Length: 237
Image 1 (cartoon, rainbow, N blue to C red):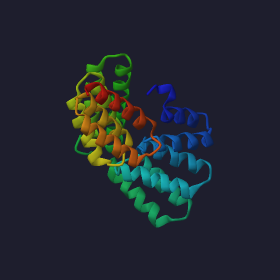
Image 2 (cartoon, rainbow, N blue to C red):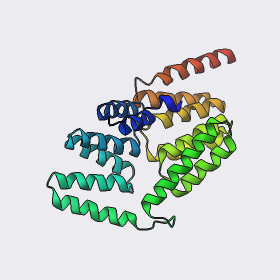
Image 3 (cartoon, one colour):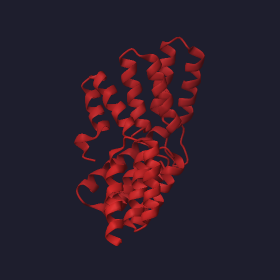
Image 4 (tube, rainbow, N blue to C red):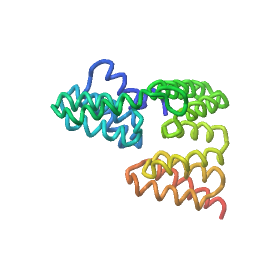
C-alpha cells in the first residue's frame, strides 16, 4: 500500500495536527480494512481521550492490550485514563503492570525500548521495500521480528516482501504464523490465498479466499482474486 494512502499513516499525521475527529474516522477505516493492530487501537484510544470520550478510549486501549499485552504506552495511557475517571484501584494496578513491562525482557531490552527498536527496523524495511531492495527489506523485517515476534503487522510486511521476491513458500509460512495468532485478520487470509495461487495451488487459494469472504464480505480484493482464479482455470481447461 502506498504510504500516502495508508490510513494509519494519515491518522498519525492528523493526530500531530490535533485533528482528533479525523483520526477517529481514519482509524475506523483502518480497522475495517483489516489493520486492527495494537498501534491503531492505541492511537484511537488517545484520540477518544482527547475528544472526552473515555468509555470509547478505554475500550480502544483494552483492544490494543488484547493484541499486544506488553504494549507499555497503551498500559500507561489506560492507567492514566482510569485515574482521571476516579477508578484508583484499577489505575494503580495498571501502573504496576507498566512498571513490570519496563523491566528487561527476553531480548535484553526494556519492553518499550524493544518495541521502539522493532518498529524502527520495520520502518527501515518499509523504506528498503519501496526502493526495490527486497533482500535488505526482508533482513530488516526479520530483525524486527526477532525482537517482537508477535507483531502481526511486521510479519505481514515480511510476507508481502517475500511474495514480491517470488518466495511464495516462505511467504506462506509467515502468513500461517500470523493466522495462528489472528485467525480473523483478513489481510493475512487474503495474502495466504495469493501465496497459494502464485505457487499453483489453485484449490487452496480458493479455500483461503472463501474464508476471507466470510470474515469480511465487503473485501474488494476477494472478488478480484476470484475472477483471476476463474480465468486461470478456464485457460487450463
